[in-house]
Each structure stands twice: as structure tokens, then as C-alpha cells.
Image 1 (cartoon, helix red, strand yellow):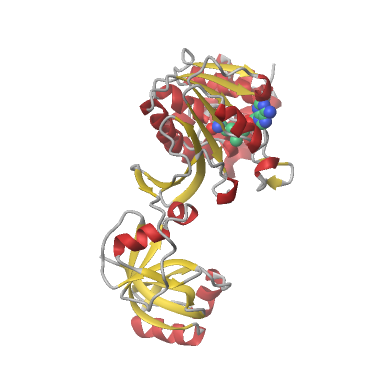
Image 2: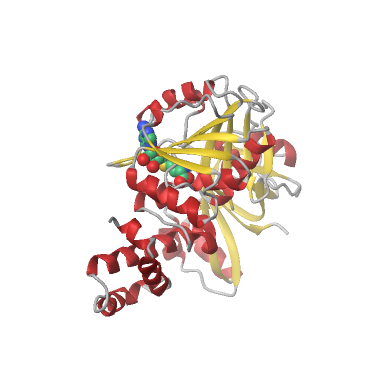
Length: 390
Ligand SMILES: C[S@@+](CC[C@H](N)C(=O)[O-])C[C@H]1O[C@@H](n2cnc3c(N)ncnc32)[C@H](O)[C@@H]1O
């Protein structure tokens, strides 16, 4: 019996309940106590699973994470529930009622698809990962909708399904993989599989995918959640406009479609600085945001938008700039002291300065808060000081 099998027995569940909220600092003491009544490998398995569940809370929320089963790679590589739910809703909206989820991992996407009312064939070649996916479908009451199959995805027929979803492994023995052809399976295989889908297909890829690597018949969507860029998705078939680009921000969703605007011109700094959401930057849609706020770029090579007016947009955070000067630590220190700034947020684009180093050097003290942007204006290293616009 492997660890997962044991953890799903009544004894395993009881042990998991007992260690559920173990503080990492108390783990040794808890393990020592439990080993008096339980075999040591089972105690380690329960404590290990409890740790994975704690890590999974950020992705799945406490209620689901507390019932699910994870492997270390499985929790690391799984899609966060908000993003998976957004994609699943989009597929459901396209009339998709069954999906071949190729590379299902512990089932992050399969769960969201099933919750959207979609029947799922969930395929992974790793036996333990498949077991976790099965346990999760079971634990969340979705076993009727999710069939987990242990197989190489390249050997699975997808014809009976409305849609194909592929989330290739992007981590190898030496960490993250950047070349899409080094994914497992390679992107070219996933694209070929997507093109055979009867209705629609979605491929999850790294947000850093070069735009040139996006096939001409795909729509590319960059997704962020809470301001953090999570992934890019290549959509094929129904509902996907070939060559189109969009940025989607969660929660929401709020979607900014590309309109093909050329890069905005650089202009003299105005009263407001707009920091576009990372998904907007990755999707190369800074021009669309600049057009919304009536602005231009601070520097032709940097994704900060400057404008004279405050025009709130969900796609960028606006800051009111009070001071601008060439980069100079002493001057910054003096200015912050004069303003009584004790809480300094450092943001940077196009600067090699380390925010922590800078904060140490200027030693902010006082009751006020400020944001400093380290960037370039017309090529010159510049500091812009301000605060979020109200
Ligand atoms: C990024 S993870 C999938 C995560 C999943 N979407 C989730 O949200 O939980 C990729 C998975 O692909 C599996 N994989 C890689 N190559 C495969 C292949 N050729 N056939 C089947 N599974 C494969 C790995 O075992 C891994 O579990």
C-alpha cells in the first residue's frame, strides 16, 4: 500500500485530521508523540500531506485544499482554482460539454472543468499523480464527471470529446523549462492535438512565451490573478479569433482585447504614471491602455505610461507623481526625510538597482508612505516619487 492509499483509509484519514493544523515548528514533537501509536512511515506520510495541503491553500482555498491529496510536483504544477474556473467557464460558454484533459496532474483543471458541468477524461502518465487525481475527484464529489486514465497523452484518442485541453509539464530536473519544444509533451505536439479537436482547444503555456511562437491560427490570452501573471493560453477552434491577443484580469474577469495599435510614442512625463497589469504587458497591449488614459510612454523601451489626467482603468494602477529627478540616492534620502516617509514602496522597470538595497540606504523614517519608481525617462536613469492616485 502506498502513502496515498493509506491516507485514504479510515486510519489514514484520522491521522490526517490529527495533524491538519500542525505548526511546522511543532512537527518534530507531534511526530515523536504519534510514533508511539502509529508506524513511523505513516506518521511521515500524514505530516507530509498536511504540509502539501497547507501549501495548496493559496491555489485551491482552505476548504478544497483540506480535502484534496497532493504530490510535491502536483501542488507545484497545478493551475490555481480561479484561473482554471475562468478557462472552464469559457469552454462551457462555447458549448463544450466534454474535454480530454491531457496532462491532468493532480486534477486542478479537471476539477474546475467538472464543476463547470463538463465531463472530463483526465490523462497523466505518472501513476501516483493519477492516483491523487482520482482521490481528488472522489473527495470533491466529482467522480461521476472525471475519468482518470494513466497513459501517455500521445497515445490517447481524443475524437469522442468536444475539446482538448493540454497543460504540458514545464519543469524538468533542472527547474523551469523556457523552450516550448522542451515541454513534455512539446508545444508542437500539443498544437497538432489542438487542431484535431472537434470543437475547441486550449493549451496552457508559460506567460513568457515569445509572441513569435504563437501559431497563426491561435488566439493568445495572457491571464493574471490579483495582479500576478499566471499563464498564457492558446485557444483554437470555436470562439478563438486567429491571431488575436487579449489580456484577462482576475478576479473579474476583465478582458482587454488587442486592437492592433502601434507602440505608443514616448512623451514628457505628466502628472500621472500608470503601471499596466503584467498580463497587459505580456500581451503587448500597453498601447491600448495608453489610448484609454490618453497617455504615452515615459520611455520608448519601458512599459510605464504617463498622462496628464486621471482616468481610472482596471488594466493599470494609477499613481500621482509629485517629484521627478535624476537617479541619486542621497537626494532621494533627503526628500524622503523632508516628507517624513517611513513606508517606501520601490518599483522599477529598466533599472538594475535592487529595491532592498535602496531601502537600506535611504532608511525611511516617519509616519508617511510613498512610492518611488526607478526607471528611465528618455533614456536617463530617473526617480519618480508619488503615491497611488485617489
Ligand atoms: C503542469 S502538470 C499538469 C497540471 C494540471 N493541469 C493541474 O492543474 O493539476 C503536467 C503533467 O503532465 C504530465 N505529463 C508530462 N508528459 C506527459 C505525457 N507525455 N503523457 C502523459 N502525461 C504527461 C506530468 O506527469 C504532469 O503531471
